Image (cartoon, rainbow, N blue to C red):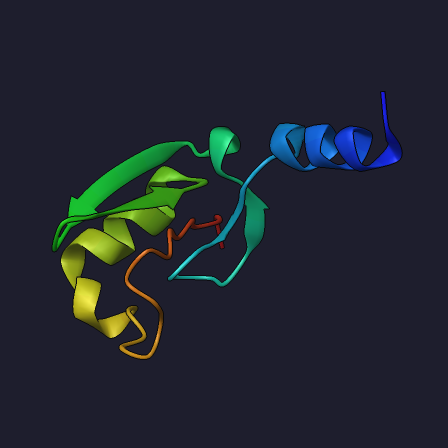
Length: 77
C-alpha cells in the first residue's frame, strides 16, 4: 500500500467533529446525546439541557455566516 493510500484511509476513518451552537463545544458527531432538525439542517447536542435551550429560541444560537453544510453540536453547561 502506498503512503498516499494510507493517508486517505486515515482521513476517511477520522470522526467528523462538529460545533455546538449553544456552548460552542467541539466533539465527534457520533457522540451527540440528541439531534434536532431546524431549517433543513440537523443540529447535534451533547446534552438535553443544550437541546432545550436551542429548542426554546434556535435563532439566538445560529450564526448566519456559517456555511449551509455545517453541522452543529451542543454541550452541557
